[in-house]
Image (spheres, one colour):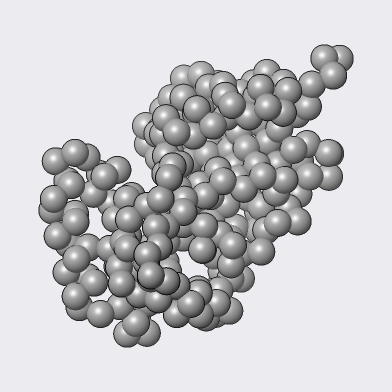
Length: 217
């Protein structure tokens, strides 16, 4: 026995969520209910066009222009309505059992997601996760600016966070677990003794099979 703690790290989109992206489901809800105005959709398209040459991370993942200029309290009410009507269908009960499994065994459960915190907070997961790391949205004059504030948890930033947590928590990564769905998470997953590819994209599935990782589809 090393005396070190065991951690279980979870991604959100397509790992615990049913939809490919919780944020995309939220945006579709806003469009169906007529809450996103044409000017905000146009701002999102302009942001995408200006960033696409830098790659999809910049153009899609960091694109929050659909909320630009909208009061934070109003958005909070939109999130509340979205969760009220969709919460039961957003998360996979089968995959969430793994969170319960680790929680029951006293492992430190950690959620690391690029999803905006305003959406993750709406899931009310504080009792299930010991640590939750999500993306914060920039606010000015009580309205969203359309930009991210601080770290966007994607790719390398997730790996860097896990390495910091290993030291901070005195974690035994060789006996710890990581659940994710994307090839962009492969470096983070490789830090763990028990990486689990959940609903993996084609590249991650190929990598996982080649390295004899556990697969859940």
